[in-house]
Amino acid sequence: MKMGDARAARSRAAGEPGRIKAPAGRGRPAWLAKAHRRYLDILASVYIYNEHRGYSSIDRVLDGVRRQYPQATAFIATVEKHRRDERQHYLMFRRYFEARGAMPYLVDDTCGHIDRLIRLTFGCGIDDLDADAMIDDPEMFERLCRVIMLTEMRGMRQVEILLRSPLMASDRSLVKIFRVIERDEPSHWAPYEGWIRDHGGAMPNLAERMADAWVHRSLILFKLPLLYFNPRLVRRTAWQDEQDLPDGYAGRAVASEAWPPGARQAGADRRPVEVGDRIDHGVAAARRPSLHAGNRDFEAR
Image: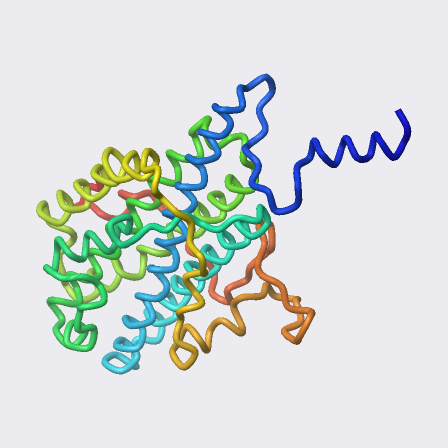
């Protein structure tokens, strides 16, 4: 075989540029590899939706907290770090799809843990919440803190489960993203738990814990299988952050957060965050606590 023919054969074996390829598997049937690829894409699509929903919702909380509690600088700083982390996680998932020449599947708020928990707790969707009125009411704000706290704790446990799953092992890029999330997650619920304790509030009650458990189980047992077996499930045609308002907090943050430290923020030198980039948020991450550490009256289930 001539060298040119051999190069062409290797090119055909590698697939055309931009073509979605299933995870490699030695001796695995093509249909099984395709089924595995669909599972991973749906999983990543649900996560990128939740990461975007997370940081865009935190923007509203931050605006209210800065107005109502400007003296709470330490709390504001930790919530800002939470927002930055969520944004960075979103960008890593986006880069994951971009590197494969694919778009995420189109999922809606029925796949959002925080969306569904907010609806069960407050009786309305996130977009319908009056954030200013809620932050002005200490009791309502503490309830919101408990919802965020439960969501982040649940996210931590789910990431640990995913990282132990053999279904994840073949996709190293996705594993790296979840390792970053695993590292960041403990510092996300800590500020809200601290706020509740500092203001003499109560930890999540039985009804709130049951709502959290129901949302999680319904997503895993019903929603995800329905997505997987839905032949009409389509991919997005635009990225979620293309709808972010340029004049809001998110718009001000993108310019400084979309690029890791050391990358020049001018013209062609800009690049998205990639898996493996070292991200220094300027706020020391909290030591990774146990879900039960320092919390005797709340047992995460």
